[in-house]
Amino acid sequence: MPDLETKQTTRRPSLKELLTRGDLISPEELAAALRVARITTYKWASRGVIPHLKLEGVVRFDPQDIEAWLKENHRTAPYSEWPKKNPKGRAARNAPSGGPCK
Image 1 (cartoon, helix red, strand yellow):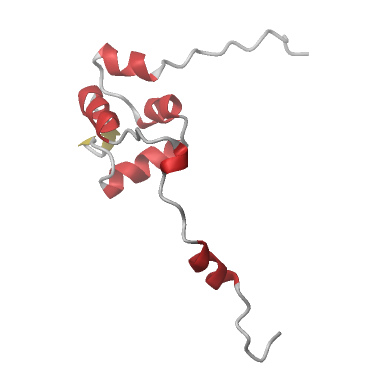
Image 2 (image 1 turned 180 degrees about the horizontal axis):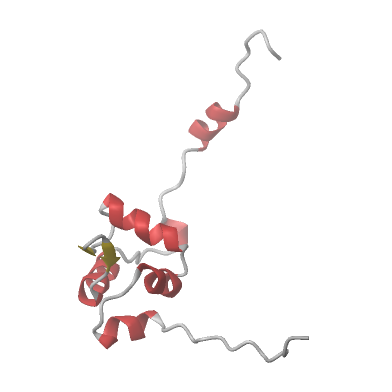
């Protein structure tokens, strides 16, 4: 029977720690710090949403660029003041077509 030792987990660095340590940040580290899926960081990079470096096919993020990007994209308005979705448009998409199939 295998030894049932307690599983040791490594502590993930916080966003503040990632931004202050000076090393380039991997997509996995950034995703964990931002609490998004790893693939999201890759998609943001490929779409040009987030500043990144591509070194011989490897995506990395510069801490200074990420800090500036976060400050630039930070929402200061409370949630109640965010733009509302158009309920009319949503209702129109979900409304029955009225065609021959009912």
